[in-house]
Every structure is written in structure tokens, then in C-alpha cells.
Image 1 (cartoon, rainbow, N blue to C red):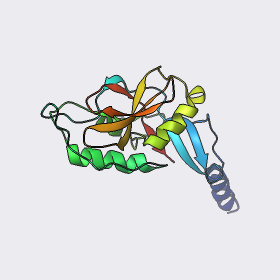
Image 2 (tube, rainbow, N blue to C red; image 1 turned 60 degrees about the horizontal axis):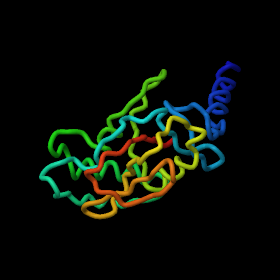
Image 3 (cartoon, rainbow, N blue to C red; image 1 turned 45 degrees about the vertical axis):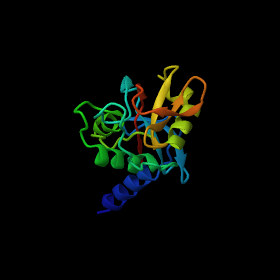
Image 4 (cartoon, one colour; image 1 turned 90 degrees about the vertical axis):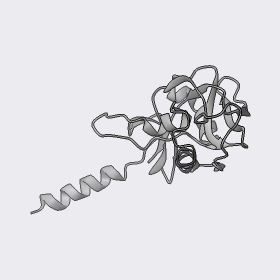
Length: 178
């Protein structure tokens, strides 16, 4: 009878253990923490592709506005959902938000809630790329739309964020929140 409260206390203590930047956790590597390490962001351990477009395709030169303008911590998740809902399958080929959303990893548990990071989330990831590792000297897509024809990207060599034509092919590094 005494072991049940102890077991519950031990489980609670493990759940409240603070996480830290660089920790292997939740299918990736923690690169941002807040609320004393109880919440944060995890990056996939590698890029999903060496180059993929932001938009879902369709007629050349015509881009569907998504209004995925969120920028900040956890904004990438809603941006990704908006992009997929608006663009659906497009021309049938995959695109940055969809490949991020469909990514999953199973190290003991299934982690399938990945998304394309917002402009701010990707910038934080850029600043922590030495801890996370595996970044190429090139551009990566964010989920933050700039206008009908452009979305924000970030060069992980220079750190420069810029508005890029949605038809460009850039790398993708998905993230997830905890």
C-alpha cells in the first residue's frame, strides 16, 4: 500500500524534471526551453530534404494566398495546418508544410506532431544550430508567408532572413513543441 503513493510521486517527479538545450528528447534535440524547462521546442535530428518548394503547385506563377502569417513561438504549428488546409494536394507533389506535417519518428514512442517552424522559431533554431547539428550552408523554409508569391526563408550560413519566391526549393527542418 505504501508503494503506490511512492510510485505516483516518482512518476510526477520525472514529469516535472526540467529539460535543457541540447537534450535528446521527444524524437529530436531540444533547442529552446521556457517555463523553467517544462516547455520548449524540439528539432528533428536531420533535414528532411535538400530542396523542396513552399507551395503545393498548380498553374505556373499563380500562388494561393494562405494567410499563414503567424510569427513567434508555437506559431509554426498553426501556420502549417493553415497551409495544408488551403493548399491541400495542389499538383500532387509534396511541399514544405506537408512533408513536415507527415514526418514522424519512433524512438520507443511515436512522435508525429512535427511542423514547419515559423520565422521566429527557425531563427532560434539557427542560433542553436551548433547544438542541434546537421545544418547545411543554405536556405531553409519557414511556415510564415510574406505575401501571395513569397514566404520567409533563412540562410543557415549567414543568418539572413528573406522573402523568397514560393517556387524556390530550399531545405526543411521540422520542429515540435513539448
